[in-house]
Image (tube, rainbow, N blue to C red):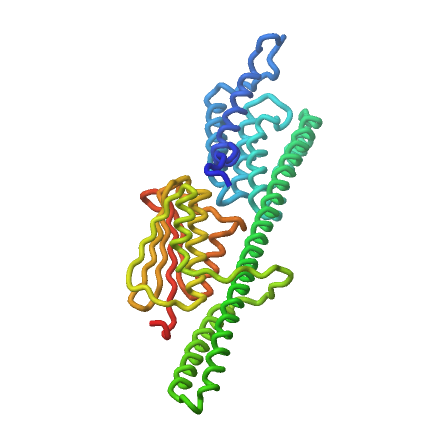
Length: 399
């Protein structure tokens, strides 16, 4: 991911209300221009009705403009009412023109509103809005026919066709967005599952190491049980402590792990906070200075907490190198009152908490902390840069 993301397209930066207002003003201006004989024309494109420039015509223009603007403002809250207001605005404006149907220019605002409704709201709401827009055109033609007035049937069919096409475009945008959200959710779920599998592999190595120690201590105890009972007792106490520590780690980590890791090569032995200095030196040599600060009295941590804390530091430092656009960061390890370990990684960069190779580094860190019943935050700093914090409670046996 690049350090600077491209700006969103114009259609996303401008609000629906602003688009509605711009299109309405443009359509009104276009309509006024068509009532004049423009250069190259023998006559105006359309002759205005008598009331166009009278007080009643101006009143209708003001009312229709107010309804169009209000409809744009309501698109985010009441889409059907917003669509109805833009339709009424088109009808009111058309009454001041000497035309035999609802012109395309007057219906552009309704089309814009219809596009946003179809692109944003569920299918049922979008279909109702489409029925309102097309139904109004049909009703307008029917009323004029019943009164034996002239009707521009072909022009109204063209308006109806364009209205349906605009609705289809909005519906297509809605489907694309829903599909993208579904894919994003699936990728996030896969990333969390992959992170859990990696944690499971690391836990497997940790448990295997602990079981090996237990076996050695138990064997030593059995060999000196009769000749040196004090040494045998010490060995069995070591077996008990190691077993309790391993079981505590398993209880914390395996609650949320349900899948098995198949077909993947085993990883190297798990790292820990003892490797933070090596990580800092490697990163500093690569061009980003890492300052490591330790608060409180350092102590031996359970393997799962030790490993998870290191992974959080590793992921965060990797994010700083790749995405923060800064030359330094700070890592703080705070051993608080024998009750918890607090980890904090801060930088003065662009305020981006981007992910690592998986695309969901923050999700992986949050998952690790949740499995250990801790607290995790990741957000831009008010003074600039980004901060990642994790609080990992320590089991009673370690306090």
